[in-house]
Image 1: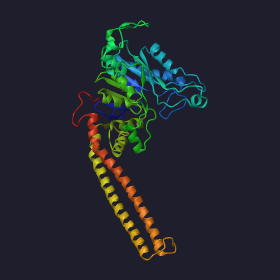
Image 2: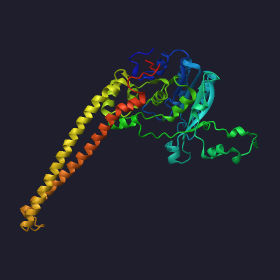
Image 3: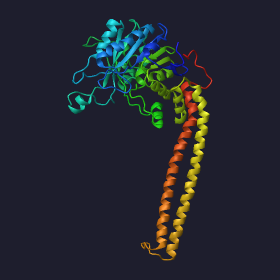
Image 4: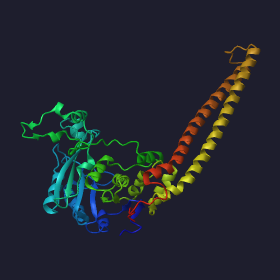
Length: 436
């Protein structure tokens, strides 16, 4: 199906692959995939580090992937595409490329538009700079269009899997429906019957998905910061693919992301018990996405797995678990060294302060004027004070170091439990999960 050169890492439920998505799609069997959910590089005017197509060529470029995807989708399968909006070059008027994609996929590729969604990101920065910030003639663009395409008119979907918590008012209504409304035909001709007061386990979500893209403390970003590796610049928030995976698939179904980037989709699918494949053209980005699958992993151990993934296939979680005893041993060694450094710094500090006290006592006994800069005793006292200050600074550094090493040791010791929580206890196989 896929070669070892194409595989970057595997997990109990999925495989991260490296290569051109059009070629990788050929490795999937006909009608074998339940959901493809992805966010392709947007057709922006400015070139991005991760690569993006020009607006003029974008529709035909993306249609290639839509055509290849249709072959592998089941008749009940769906293709969900997050498409960012854009302006025309040099003009404060909108590009129509998202809608041209819609028409191309429906009219020519013969997909069905099951429903359009809108992802509202309240944390999105004002853009484009020229029209919004400088000239102030346009408002902030905070919504992406998400096209939900289906191969047939009847894709798998179940709203009951994505119900949202009831509002406080609805909770009150459910407790005593007759107190809050009467069954009647409204002016809008909606018939509000007594069934409106039934508790269905939650509220039906709308097609406006409010999800802030503000991740800052994920394991992926933590490890990138600690290792000083630049993260992928365009990342899904977890809740966006999570909504569609839960809505459009069942446990054990197969999910694919053909532009996986930092592989949020694969990580979410793993946690939801769906089989998954993720495709990424850039090998370094594909390898770096392994950080999403290393919860609480010490940075040095994570770095070694990332470096391996850049060269060959890494098998998770077994290879990660194999590094934990080494990581704990290394962290314990560094912590003991930090303890010794702190102890030595404390002894030296006390020694320097004792020296200062001794000189002060001598100056007091000899009644030396404390402002007499010509006195050898006063000069010695100044030097001793400087040494004492340096000793305090060294002790402060040692205290910071031991806190850092204590945190690193705690992380290393927690890694085994974190992996068990993420993947299941060591030695327990996930039934029919490994895609290989």
